[in-house]
Image (cartoon, rainbow, N blue to C red):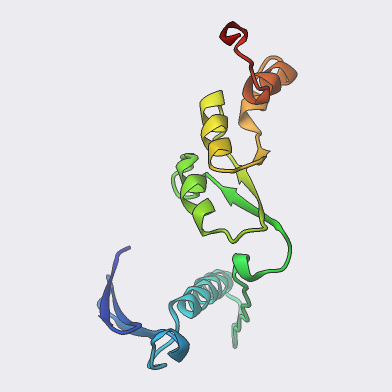
Length: 169
């Protein structure tokens, strides 16, 4: 699937889908929009509801069910707007299953002060731990590195123990 999103000025955008449909989007007036279309985040919710409903109806009809109605109500909150001080950032791309700590290093810059960030997945060596600590991370969810280790305790020490260079006097 592909889509092209073009800026129409101010806070307005037009998306053109691969099937040739055009969708106007606009931001709220307090962000320069004129309320001429749904917010892009509203379309994310609508798309989730549409995909889920499509699948449910399709499966029911395939099973020869007499489907007469289908409705999905979706609610969401922005993670950074939620109360609480804990936020997890998963480093795994759920499409390809490739992990990279660059995801955390990029997104942690968007996190407001006062939040405790836990980085998850792709923490396999001391280099990753050093880079994440240098970016201010103090919470790590490590799984694979321990699961494949012959001695998980030794692997923990290898990843997280601070080593002192005694030769520096």
